[in-house]
Image 1 (tube, rainbow, N blue to C red):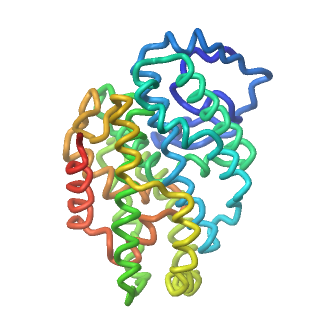
Image 2: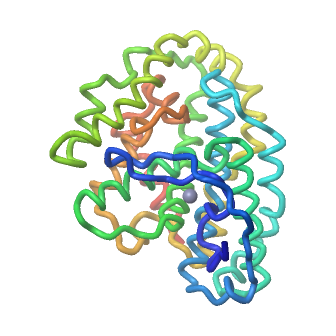
Image 3: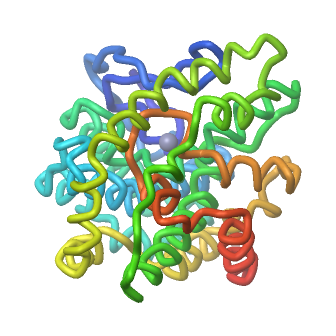
Length: 324
Ligand SMILES: [Zn+2]
């Protein structure tokens, strides 16, 4: 395989995202026999593609935190510090070279391609996309699914993921503030019902097939959550020890904004081209945790009663406030 742009991390893994029943689903595919990355070729790719690659790359911060959380609560025990460390290699210097990246300078584009390649290998080694696919990717998936349903084009995958990564970092901070305040109660009655999930995704197709596909996977997660509320409560009770680990994974939204902004990549949903409708963005942010069976920060937020329409509006306003 010859990689023609540093635009996504999917060139070097053994999984593909397919539309199944109208919903984006990760599906096993195969490893490439060989991957050729020519610095001259990728540095001549359109700058928008390189900037999108940076957006896909920064997903590792919030995705890593979601992956850690899924492990901590016992939903998915595959979290691997070794894989996280492999993915982190070279990322800090990449973030400081984002200006050069935005200009398509060969050195910086090659560094991005190496990081993306390691991210793909990490996902393959983990046997799942979780190391680089958390809340930020489900937001992007929903934006794309909605655009497809409406027959509209959507912004590139990486540009959406970059913006959604900033939003996810802010959502993490929003929930952590509540946890730091203490006195959090988890209520199983807050777990979404079949009716809520079907209603959330009803507009994706007239037959209801996509909504049923989302419920098919969410149902597994919701059943697990109801049966493991005490495990979740113990994570909340021991939050300070988890917070230390999560601090190693998460980068503040401001750091991600600075890197994307320096590369002249979008940092807010309004800066995406084409720009998704505001109501569609709010819909995706509100419901992204209901589309699949991966545990993340919004599942915890929902249980805490911390993902109401007001919470979504608050975090979205914070994101808009970071626009350069
Ligand atoms: Zn991606």
